[in-house]
Structure formats: C-alpha cells, structure tokens
Length: 180
Ligand SMILES: Nc1ncnc2c1ncn2[C@@H]1O[C@H](COP(=O)(O)OP(=O)(O)O)[C@@H](O)[C@H]1O
Ligand SMILES: [Mg+2]
Image 1 (cartoon, rainbow, N blue to C red):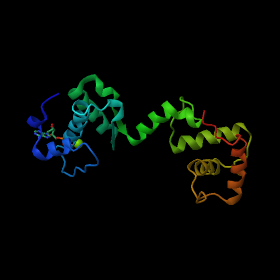
Image 2: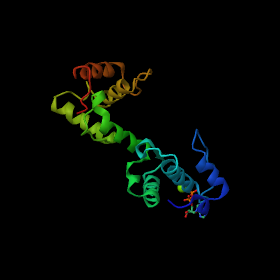
Image 3: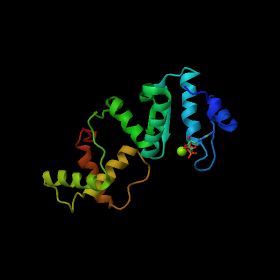
Image 4: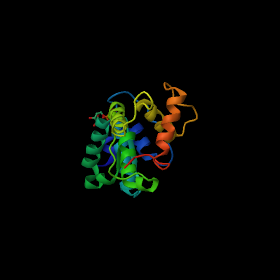
C-alpha cells in the first residue's frame, strides 16, 4: 500500500487513523473525502488487519459505489472484492439473496417497481377470475405492504371493505406471501 503520509494532508491523515468509533468528515466537493474513506479502509485492512468481509461502506449512488470499488481495488488489489461496498438498496438485496432463506425468502426473487407490482397483482387477480371492483390490485398491494412492514396505521386510499377483502385473499396464502 502507498505511504499514507505522502498522499494525505494532516486532517485527512487524522481521519484515516481514527479507526475506533464514529468519525464525521464534513468537507466540500473535491476536497478529498472519498480519498479519506478509501484510505481509512486501507488502514483497517493493512494496519489493523481487519478482515475485508467485516468492512461495510454504504454510498448514496451506484456511481459512487463503483468509484469507491475501483479506487479500493487500485489501492489494495483483489482483496477489495470481499469488502462490502454498495448502496443501501444493493446491500439489502445482497443480504436477502444470501440469507433470505432464514426468513422464508428464496434466493431467486426479483425486485420490481410499483407499476410492475400493480400489473403483476392485476394479472394474478385476473387469472383467478376476481372482479377488480370487488378485489382491487391497489387494495391487495396496500394490504400486503402494510402486513409486511408491520405498520400501525391502516393503508390509505382504499375503502375498509376493499382492505377486508384483500386481507382475506392474502390470508389464503397460508399466512405467508407469494414471495417465491
Ligand atoms: N491530500 C491530497 N493531495 C493531493 N490530491 C488529493 C488529496 N486528497 C484528494 N486528492 C485528489 O483530489 C481529487 C478529489 O478527491 P476526492 O477524494 O474524490 O474528493 P471528494 O470525495 O471530497 O469529492 C481526487 O483526484 C483525489 O485523488
Ligand atoms: Mg467523493
């Protein structure tokens, strides 16, 4: 690894070396924040001998994650592949894909957006010959989300009767949801 003191200023170096506990890096664009983060990870790996798979770096965008990964790869080599770098969403998908079976979610699930969800539920209801006026895709989705998330407030935008129908319909899935 490159010698940190040659490529980091004093403030950056202090943040890199402060490996124990939280550190807030508050600085302008292009001032070297990402450089601090990548070198902090390099420090954890190289100096403190932390296993790469025990390091997690969460970024806001996929672009930032990609940049972080490539900078880490350039700095520490192939071991960078074992560090957890990604957005909150991609990290959660990765965890679910790997360990979801422990909570009844198969590894081959797909993530779909709201309009695809509605379309899919609509197709299922059509297949099962349900009348959209009696059991709407919206009510099913709202109820399923409500039940999964375990919120206390009832879903908005659907009548009590629609939600009651949807609850009965979903209960027919043996207490679970058709995740697989
Ligand atoms: N101490 C430093 N000395 C020289 N160049 C630096 C230093 N810190 C960062 N840089 C360079 O400045 C540019 C911006 O750094 P970066 O870490 O991407 O900033 P930020 O994440 O704050 O936008 C990069 O090319 C980086 O390599
Ligand atoms: Mg940056």
